Amino acid sequence: MRVLVVGSGAREHALCVALSSDPAVTAVAWAPGNAGTARIAEAAPLDVADPVAVAALATGWGADLVVVGPEVPLVAGAADAVRDAGIACFGPSAQAAQIEGSKSFAKHVMAAAGVPTARAWPVGGPAELETALDEAGAPYVVKDDGLAAGKGVVVTADRDAAVAHGRRVLDAGGAVLVEEFLDGPEVSLFAVTDGTTVLPLLPAQDAKRRDDGDAGPNTGGMGAYAPLPWAPPGLVDDVLATVLQPTVDEMRRRGEPFCGLLYAGLALTSRGVRVVEFNARFGDPETQVVLPLLETPLGGLLHAAATGALAGHPPLRWRSGAAVTVVVAAPGYPEAPRTGDPVTGADGEGVLHAGTAADAGGTVRSAGGRVLAVTATGPDLAAARQTAYERVAAVRLAGAHWRTDIALAAVEGRISLP
Ligand code: AMP
Ligand code: GLY
Image (cartoon, rainbow, N blue to C red; front, top):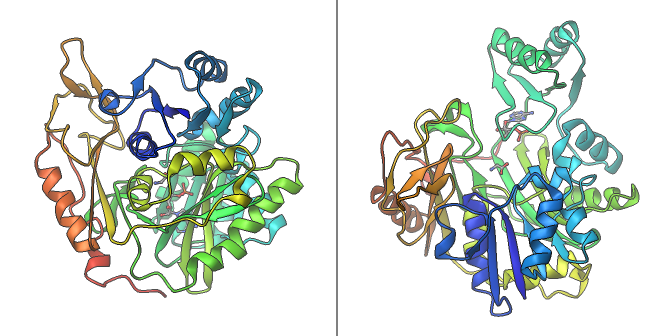
C-alpha cells in the first residue's frame, strides 16, 4: 500500500514514522513536508489548501491511501477531491469537517445528539457581547467561531480583555461565541471512524498555554503525554458511549457522515465530562505521543476506516509504557514567531520536525512558530519525560523556548479530579 500524507507539521512526521513501520505499507510520501521529510518519506511540493492539487498529486504518485493531517485542507474539500479521484482518503468531507470549522455547527450537532458541552451564547455584535459576558459570568470564555489554529480562544477573569478579544474578532468580520467556563483537567481523546464504527485511541493530555504552570497565552499546543495515570477508570468507554458514538451517529443521520479522525477535547468537570471542542483531524502534538504507543499497524487501520471496513478490524493493541513530547518553539510564538534561524541537533532520535525548512545551502532553518516536537517513550512517564528533555537539550535554536513541565504534574501525582 502506497500512502500519501498531507501536511507539514510534527503530527505528519509522527504519522509518517508510524506508517513506515507498518509492513503492509510499501511507500510513504509526505507533502509538502519540511526539513525532516527526506529522513522518512518521499517529498513533493503541494499547496494543501488546493483540493485539486491534493487529488492530482495522489493520482500522479499512485497513492492507495491519502491521510490528511491538518484542518485547512479538510475544510477546503481535499478529502472530497481525493475520493472523487477514486482514491481512499482518511479524512472527513468538507461538510463533515465543519464540526471543527464552525464551533456553532459543532454545538448544533452536540445538541441534537445529546452530547454534554459548555453552554454557549452566539454573539452578533458588540452589545450582545456585553450581555453574553454578563450572563455567562467570570471567568470569561470568548471564542472566534471559525478556524484560528488554536489561537481564537481567550479565557480570562479580566472583563476588559474578554470584551477586547470579542471585538477584535467581530471587527475582523468573524462570529463570536461566549461560553460557560468549564473547570477540571482536560483530556484529548481521538477516535478513528468510518462513519459508523468508532474505535477510540489512548487518551492524552496537551499543554495548551505557552508557559510553565499553564501561564501565558493559548497556543496550538506546547507538549503532550500519554497515557494519563490520573484518568478515571472507564473514561474511554464512557466517552465512547456519551460523546463519540452519538456524534458519529448524528453526523450520519444528517447525511454528512464523518470518516476520519474525530478528536474530542474534553474537560472532566465537577459536573461530569463536557466537550470543549471537536477537531476533524489528529491533534498536534498529542499524535506524537499516541502513535508511538500504538502496536496495531497504522496503515491498515486508517485504510479500513477510509473504506468503511472498520467493523471487521481487530481490536487495537497498545504497547505498555508512556510517551512524552516537548514542543520547541521559535521566539515570539504564538503572537509573532521569528523564523529563518539555523536549527542544529535536529536529526536525533525522536526529534520530529514541524516548522523547519532547508535553505539552498542545505542548512535547516526555523520556518514556523512550533519548530520541533521532541519525543520519547519509556517504561513510565517519568522515564519518557527524562529522555525527552535530554533530547531537547541537544537541540540548538537561537531564542527558542519550550515548557519545562510537560507531564510533570502527572508524574508528581498533582492532577486531581474535581
Ligand atoms: P478550543 O479552541 O475551543 O479548543 O479552546 C482552546 C482552549 O481554551 C481549550 O483547550 C481550553 O483550555 C480553553 N477553553 C476553551 N473553552 C473553554 C471553556 N468553555 N471553559 C474553560 N476553558 C476553555
Ligand atoms: N493540540 C490541540 C490541537 O491539535 O488542536
